[in-house]
Amino acid sequence: KQEVTQIPAALSVPEGENLVLNCSFTDSAIYNLQWFRQDPGKGLTSLLLIQSSQREQTSGRLNASLDKSSGRSTLYIAASQPGDSATYLCAVRISGSRLTFGEGTQLTVNP
Amino acid sequence: DAGVIQSPRHEVTEMGQEVTLRCKPISGHDYLFWYRQTMMRGLELLIYFNNNVPIDDSGMPEDRFSAKMPNASFSTLKIQPSEPRDSAVYFCASSFGAALMNTEAFFGQGTRLTVV
Image (cartoon, rainbow over all chains, first blue to last red; front, side):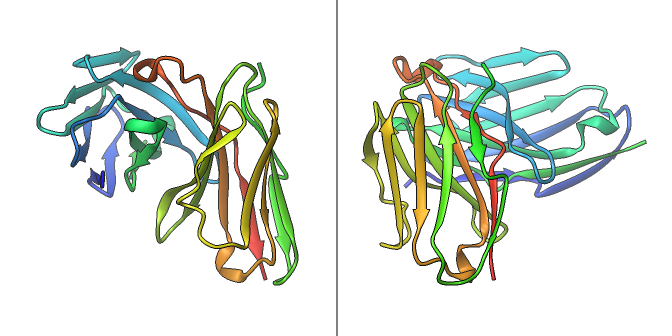
């Protein structure tokens, strides 16, 4: 059974700092990995999608990497801003189109 | 496209009542998912459909839960009778699954259900 773990569970940083969020998964037979952002009381917003054949994807200040063989992904946020404060979730897609989610990392960027 | 649309956004009901949650997926998407999010268990997949057909309902917690997708643009998740432990945020998501590697899932804003 695929298990997805995110570390740390919570992170608080000062504005402007670069930071890394970690995601690990137990079964490397994935189709892709997706990073989401969730604001309090809101739905999930897709940030980045990395296909199983890719190593990384970039969007603005966000960079996500994928190492399938070791079952790890990282989300790098450059020059963090208070508006980046949210919960970040990673999810892996395995056979049958199922998405399995991690517990999320709650990020707070302090002005 | 307006994205995945869920209704209602909030629902408060008494224990024992029937609750129906609604979802309109993104036009053209052939996969539809129902998830439940709680503090204790995080995001759990309840059921998903492909081309309106239920594919995997192993996440549906009990017979009190049922889901239908009568057509490509509408799905419902029904709880009857509802219990306080069903209180959670229920998300609907859709994706176009022709090429699974490229498939990106898009989520609705969720329905926050409170059963008192």
